Length: 205
Image (cartoon, rainbow, N blue to C red):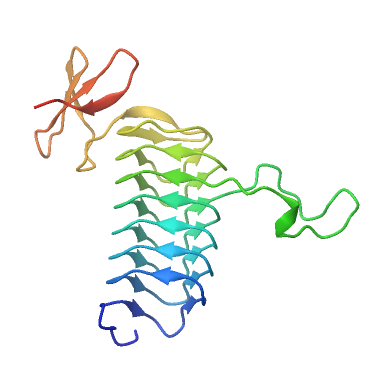
């Protein structure tokens, strides 16, 4: 690991952080990670060994990207997001290596559609998220899932394709069902309420 800068940013000598990218104060970039030009990485983040952050990707503050995760443009990750090992955020709805004429496709031959991960959500190891999927704040996606549609805030989803299995609180624990649309976190005792539309939110007061 290289010596910390004045801002506390640490970049391993084997990592590649391209000119034109921005890495925030206090962020650590581990071995063989690659940050493309035009990417923006917030403060206090961790990019694990072999992680890839594509051009035009934006990471908020305190984001943790584990080893060998691949984040393709133009993904947007909010503050405090967790991306597990070998997760893939895809961006191509109609993937082909060549055009219909047989010529190799370049970056101008498709419209990239990015994944959006809201504040505090967690994506389990080896999960694949399809282009354009939006994962709500504090949601949790189980390891090995394939996410084909949007995930509501605080939802616990898993499987192929991923489906809702329950609710989780901000501490990451599955919520206890108290009946009547009310839930409680067993770790923090925080209360949550499910509305008539099936959306969960922290209880007022």
